[in-house]
Amino acid sequence: MFTLTATPPLIPGASRLRELIVAVRRVVRTESDAGKVGASVAHLLQPCLGAEDFLRPEQMAPGGEAYRQHILHVEPDGSFSVVALVWLPGQATAIHDHVSWCVVGVHKGQENETVYRLEESERNTHLVMESETVSPIGSVAALVPPGDIHQVENGGSEIAVSLHVYGADIGKLGSSIRRRYDLGVRHAPEALVS
Image (cartoon, rainbow, N blue to C red; front, side, top):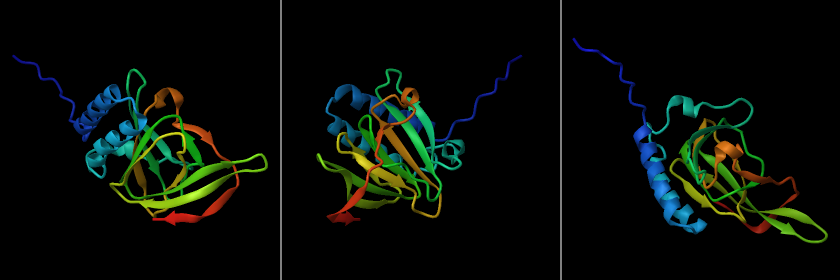
């Protein structure tokens, strides 16, 4: 006589997510320069973008009035987190910067990013728009504070999903946002649109 036990079905993308986590862990443990960490993690994240089996359907479920965050992994020591953000058309972040280095990749749809710089003087503090970028599936970028002020929006007509790796414990913090900027915006004459 034998006992038949149910084996849970394989979770699509789980092995690829595990491989990404192991690789990011190796980088975070061996490299201390945030710029180099960001570049290395961007290189690791890029092949995952657009892979049909990387996320389960519930990890791509949108929110209501605001974009939705799905925490995929928080490293036990809090050194990094992997998150999926899901955006309905027109949903956007506030203008913000981050608590740590951050790598962002577009997994589905497209995202529009506007980058700003802070101009401070005794008489006036404002933001200057430096560039606007439309990022399709497969686009990846590394952001390192300070000077990482931006706003992200789903400017397309379908759902957008982006994968984020942060050098912080997003489970504890709840968000990667350090500061929101509610300041006047000026356009730099050299601002680029790509």
